[in-house]
Amino acid sequence: MAKHAFDKFINKAASGAKKKEAIRQEKRKLKQEKREKIQELRNKKQETRIKAQDARNKEQGKYEVRSTKYEGKESNKEQETRDKGQDSRFKEQDSRNKKQSKYEVRSKKYEIGNQKPEIRNQKSGKHKSPTTNYSQSPADEPQPTHKVLRTNYKQQLETEDWKPETGLMPLNKFIAHAGISARREAAEIVKQGKVQVNGSVVHEPGFKVSSNDKVQVNGKQIFPQRNLVYILLNKPKDYITTAKDPEGRKTVFDLIKTATKERVYPVGRLDRNTTGVLLMTNDGELAQKLTHPSFEVKKLYEVKLDKPLAKKDFETILNGVTLEDGLVKADALAYADAKDKSIIGIEIHSGRNRIVRRLFEHLHYDVKNLDRVMFANLTKKNVDRGKWRYLREKEIRLLKYMNQSFVRSKK
Picture 1: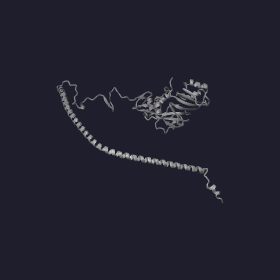
Picture 2: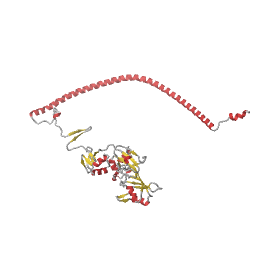
Picture 3: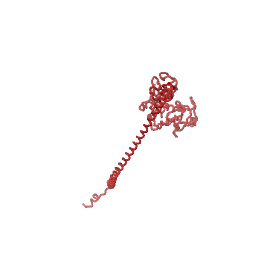
Picture 4: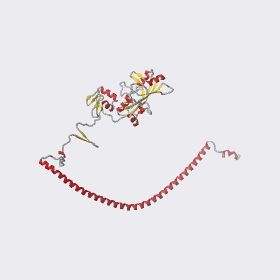
């Protein structure tokens, strides 16, 4: 057989996958060689740095040896000057002490000389001098008629006519601070005769009490809360905003069992089928501010109606609707979805019971879903339905100082 018959097998060039793999291997080799060269350069640079550092250290050692010699000489001279200065100061102090002792001897002589006329007057029975008798013992001195209250920074005088501030507050406010309820509800509890102060039943919510008084609600003594808690809950449907339900229905307190051991209560109310932002706290003073009509705190709701809202009714809501308990007017109104006009966004500051539902029902609309999107400056962003979170310090500060961003501007 001819030799050239095997050439196509012997000299066959790589093709396809084998060719690509060969190219990859070649690239890897080139990269590896490049890395090795870079590493060699780095090692050389490192060696030159080490050598330069060693040379600097040697030079520094020479200078240090020289400096210690000079420092030894200088330190001896400095010590001598310090010793001389110390001796001169001791001498000056001795001379001052001697002069002081002379003046003390003279002053004692003058004191004795001043006391002699008093002694002569006492023996002869004449009128006493108004000068102070230093020989009198502290026990013989007349005691003051008032008490002296000493503190770390000042002295106060407490007479029979003057008494320190007791920190008085209204009884309903005291109950709210104890975390029993909001101030309005506390006022009703007092009027019902369920509150005793120092063993006596009190019916006036404005009755002044202090932290020293014994206040009992339903026979249990209460104390003002110090550990304030602020919880934002994204309320789901089928939960009611009360602590206990006689019918055994689910309450919002079932959702925050693990949040705190403090007794908190909801700020305002949401219906059983209303969802959204609900603030819960034991800060009675803040709850009073956020729910009182005079502060006109903003609330934003998303309403799903059974049919599109007509333009005529849209204008009617903005102009105001008269319900059985008075006129109600929306602060702002808009279609939440341009394609679906049955979804409405309404901003309102009124805190009347079921006000949004009654407003639309009066215009013959059935509210299918009602969700509170915002209360004051609080939203349900990043809080899933049925979940809760604590308020941040900035949010609490804005609420307490009633930031104008969530209070309706009065025209």
